[in-house]
Image (cartoon, rainbow, N blue to C red; front, side, top):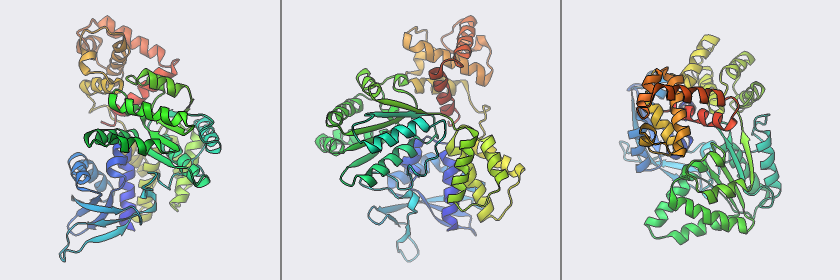
Length: 455
């Protein structure tokens, strides 16, 4: 039990440091198998060899650091391959023991995923906290559940990182599956859809892939922005979209930005997304953050004081996942380390989980993050190009170089195409002026900052 709780706390901390698709793909189904306190070694289980090697090579330092934040005795992390039984929701460890026996453990309910729908049963509309920032998106989902395929089709929901889009989408899928037993629901991330297209092309099984997606009654795609600029995937999704739409099949889509702000999305897809209902999820206000914390604390049977919950709600303002990450850490200290948490320690926990430091951010990283966001080559930002589609990204890059790193205007101009310092001044002043009155521009800068600080 202690292993499960320790690993939940670790995952809660890691989840706010990497992108959601990467977390869901590589770490969501991981498990802490063993913790040898005498030798200071932890053993982490992954579902296959590929995941094991990927996590070991990409996330080892992050995992070790997070484990040590909760348990300073851990000095080393090893990895083992596990096999998941989709029927019983169990995973069987394939690590070798002295007697060369396989060990098995039950996958916690919240990590079980229906192999047919890809839906996680822990997400429900009943547990979704509704406030002023998301009540419209929630209402549109409820309308879709009541009238599948006929009202608000497609439904496009967008909002920043960690605001509950996945919860709302999966909750809708679970609710539809519960009410309409004969309806086939399928939830996938855009990364999974892309991987399916690539595998189908490579293995010459494109018809099988088409059948899989077009035979569904409700298709839910999370983080659709990642298919932008990937021509074969966009083309296949376009035809899948049309096939479902023409047969009154429901399509629900999420993104971190509205369709008009996805730079390389094909115009024909953008027009179809905009032809349905578009709803946004904003940042939760204080009352909503406090309600989320109280609900999560109740689910964890955590006897945290009102003062602690109110303090967290006042300090963690923009990310629901960060709220849960802080609460997971508080839970670990209170329930499993039996240590009290005063406001000083709580400040340290919040800073460890959410603190953003610009000390380690470089000009190169800012430029690359902006280029990646707008899906254009870095060279387009740093050369003398005056293409219309590059003007705004370059101005945003100049603004962030000034705002985050406090670089001089001549230095900014030099970094971005050897331009005169007056060009940098104009760009920074323009973005500073427009950002408060232009919600779309503000959203772009917020999302770029989120990407930048998760490097």
